[in-house]
Amino acid sequence: SNIFSGSIHVSPSVNGFGQAYAAWRSGTLAGHLPITLRFPSRMDPRACPSGAAVMTATIAGVPVRPFDGSWTHEKREVLRQKVLAEIEQVLPGLAKHVRACEVNVPSDIELSLGYTDGDLWGGDIAADQMLGLRTWPEYPAPRTPIEGLYLAGPSTTAGVLGTCASGVLAARAVSIDISARRK
Image (cartoon, rainbow, N blue to C red; front, side):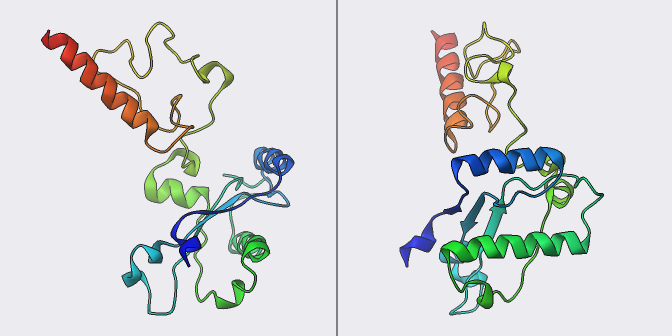
């Protein structure tokens, strides 16, 4: 089915997002976690045997450091069971087809990818950094006071709005600035 070609969002209610964020801040797991499912084997069938699928689940609201210590095997198993139960709500019967599962918590992501605290989104954006209120308000985004340095990424103004949007804006600014220097 084409439904498995894109992302599937298993999300709590609007209030649930707030509860997930509050639980994350306190080092606990919320009752319902925001989850994004992807099936990379739809794009590359060589990733698994015929008739099978590879699914990834990106879970928001997983604390970097649980309030009661580090991530243990037991805590990872609780997270795995919780996530499978959430997925069962939108894809009934899926759990019985799971042959293997690897649980990566923020410390694993930090270790393997180098993202601070395992944060795939580049950190929280403070109120003084939202929208047009960046560090250098006198420079139009994505420009900075450092010549030749342009900001792009998930923590920029456009970064939270759309995939690659901040990169496109930075590339345009570079192109415009180079063209202006040639004239």
